[in-house]
Length: 504
Image (cartoon, rainbow, N blue to C red; front, side, top):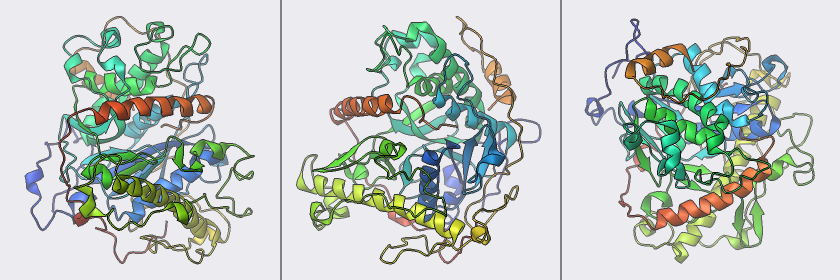
């Protein structure tokens, strides 16, 4: 078994590079998938809370060992009743880093940086997810998602046009441009690479967001909804990631098929059985539809903003009517290698994955309410891996007492120190010169460290933007040449937690 090592050694240097060959057949599937620390960011709003418990309990249900931590950005963590609903690191709220521009996407790189500055992990790999994702099976660099020191595995985002046009010249020097990639969404980092990238990710997010050259009327970002009234692209944070990681010296293995946006049809054998389901856009199955953003509306969500409130009944998320779900015969693993995009098998699978998402969201909230409220598991609702969840000691009082650095059988969070919110980092005009040398990168990495929560103002715009962008990205992807392969995912699917009970 490989010894666990911290993010950096005592002298501040990066640990030795990971060698996949170090894992023999007896270790693969038992220890390798335990070497991942998942992180995702959120803020202190009920709208983000149900997403937090859903992604967390999907991680539990997938049998993913290792660790997971929510990076929670709040103005006052002690006043938030669900601060301990999942393993959590307390980070400041970065939305108002620029007092003239409330931009909630600052929370993603800001909270990651903060986590890097205040924590260590004994895992070799750090996996960043978005809160609006469901994990279907553990991610693994030995399971088709190639990554190593200096190479990040990440999703494909074809609408990031600025990677290929004059926008790149605005922010990075010529020798860095070959490292730019249309990548993001989810990432697998070698842990010391995240230390390098985190401060630059945040820095370049601020630079892109503040630089008027990237605002309306410039059309090269790929953001089709910028206007004279709203000139700043919403996707500045995504460019901050692309430019920041390139400046940190990192390259990307861009994976097209690890994640599937729920509601889209799979296009190859891997997307037929994706690792992740992402639900950032509206989902339609004939006359049935659902969009996560309606959950912010008191009209469309029956006033049920707070789905973890023990004093209020939980109305489950809507599921796809049975008469719209085709027989899955012919849509299983064997069909994945033979069907074509637009075929009956692809449509059947699309609907089945939508239903899988909706059931996973409901199971996540049920599990959270079981633990928090002592609410019995509903009859007829399958646990599907969540039978390890037990009623918590906090059920009597409706809230768990936070235990700093508490570790349970399955989910090991980094310590959650009580951290006073720091003053927002000072902002200066984007410099005309770049952060050039490797030494500068290392100094920046040693000095700084981030959370998402892409809600709040601009949600309606973001929904429309997502539909348009993802339509274009899917069209671009389907026209690209893709290597089709089947990953050995079944081997890892339920590894690591059988028979354990979860008391978190």
